[in-house]
Amino acid sequence: MSVDPSALLLGAAAVITAIGTIYVNRNSRRDQHRQAAAAAQVQRDQHQLEETKQALEALGSALTETRTDLHEERRLRRQAEAELEEKKTLHRHMYAAQESRCLEYAGQLTDTVLTLRGVVVDEIARAAADSALRALPSHPHDLPPATPPALEGEKDDPADR
Image (tube, rainbow, N blue to C red):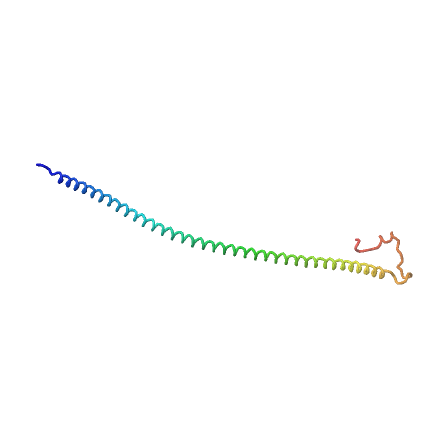
């Protein structure tokens, strides 16, 4: 049996071609798996990116809302502080006006007391003078007889008993 060298070459070429085809097929399937895995990874990354975008938009919206709320709270606080300061100023002015009126009334009362005191003193002096004048007889001959001091103690007075 003699082997034809061309058939041997043809057989060797067919084996090499088959091995090459198997190798290329294996590499091709490996590349397909890699591409499928890469496509799946891209899809997962895109999904994660979309979720991240939505989360960032929600956070941005919440941040904007929080900023708006914060600005509104600050505005309301400034407004309340201004109203409180206005009330304090009004109370200070009212207190100053009341204090001024009180001082004015105290001065008037002091003047009135001093005037009344002078009037009372004058009236007391006038009453004392009138009673002294009434006690005096109208004429020096109308004086009652003077009693000696020793006799004064001997008077029969029912209150002394």
